[in-house]
Length: 191
Image 1 (cartoon, rainbow, N blue to C red):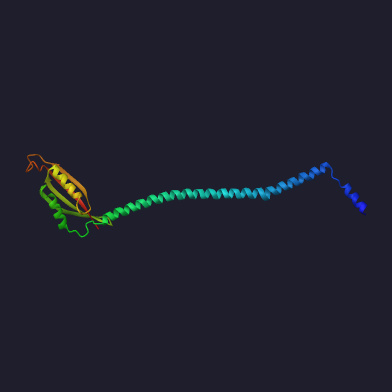
Image 2 (cartoon, rainbow, N blue to C red):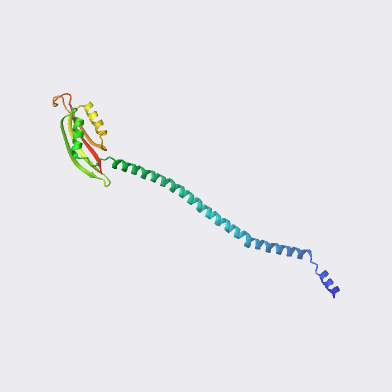
């Protein structure tokens, strides 16, 4: 029986064509297995990773844009808070109209004639108000400059809202030294 088995084995020799067909079949099977179980999952994972990286890149760009926008808005908010602090600190807190009249009277007493000081309306801006004072007087150019500088250096926060100046004829004025008729509207900040 052993002789028979040896004979059968010897008769099973494969021809070149059969060997080529088996090698080709095995190669095709290995390639198909490689393609479906290795190459496709790797390409799918690679494209997934690329998509996630693109999303992360967009998020980083958006974050940079948002960070710069947030920084700009923070700076703007800080400047608004500074302006609000400027308006609140020392701004007309409890100062009476008499104190303002005395300040303006002292400011213009030796620099103008025909002086009229009157209070106008108060504009409400929510967090602060602006009380308006109208100052009418006859003066000259150099005294007007001194008066404006004095208003700017007032102990209270203020702004010159409007100024009307009329130069008089020499014949109309009481004195040649006071040839400018002016009306100045001053806004005093108050809480």
